[in-house]
Length: 340
Image 1 (cartoon, one colour):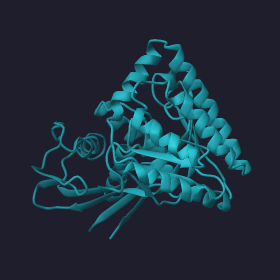
Image 2 (cartoon, one colour):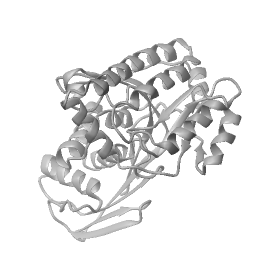
Image 3 (tube, helix red, strand yellow):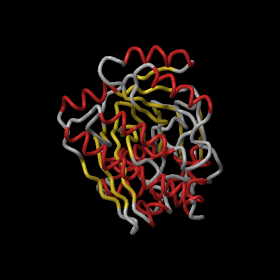
Image 4 (cartoon, helix red, strand yellow):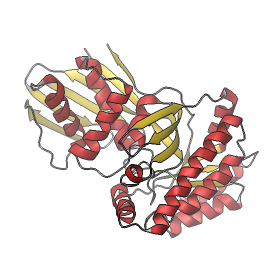
């Protein structure tokens, strides 16, 4: 038997960072995101020789262990190990023998939620294999706990829920650790227009998002007024963009992205840099009406809204910076699992 799964990566359109503690716990957060046709994949093949094999195909890491109920967290494929440890602890209560292979369509540190999406894909594969009693909210919350509590990786909550649920979602994060996912019913022609007009551009750089997120969290804890005000504005941005998309007022999206980018840069140092600023200025000069760095900032993917027929001119301008644009579509489905 072979068990497979895939979960979609996401574009964080608005409200990014308001899902991160302690802001979400004190003020509540709001996020608007959309999953896209780029994925994290997981395959589990049960074994009967008492071995555990972890294989990350894209990063070319492979480790083999004697079957045990807890794998050592040592900096090597810790996401995979942390998920296995939690599955044994909470569900099977005994060790398993298997080979787990993973692949992600975007590199680590790209800003598309790769780590959290991979956790969701792997958990989904284990749930399919073992028949674990996990609904969508249960699985997303467990993925969050594994990353943020078990492995102590800094970050927010939106990625686990977007990968699990899929589609365009308005998410609310309350101060009682409660998450509500509101799927938006958007006309297909609006989704097609979004996929066409939002250029996804990889800067060919990466960053360690935890450094930026940890500083953002410290700024909130220390009551940094500039950071907190910026996050309030990003929460407002999420609400305004939700209304614009539902009404089909798509040309407002660029303006709202630009509005949010101005405030996002105030959340923490390192979100932008001179290279990112030059790319942003070039895109705006050639017809984009707004954009942002995807995820926490500092590198990875950027995206820009290009109204009307400006797309080709913006792509041509971006090509001068040594990165590459990535074709994609906005997708409706979240985590998918199957067995053969």
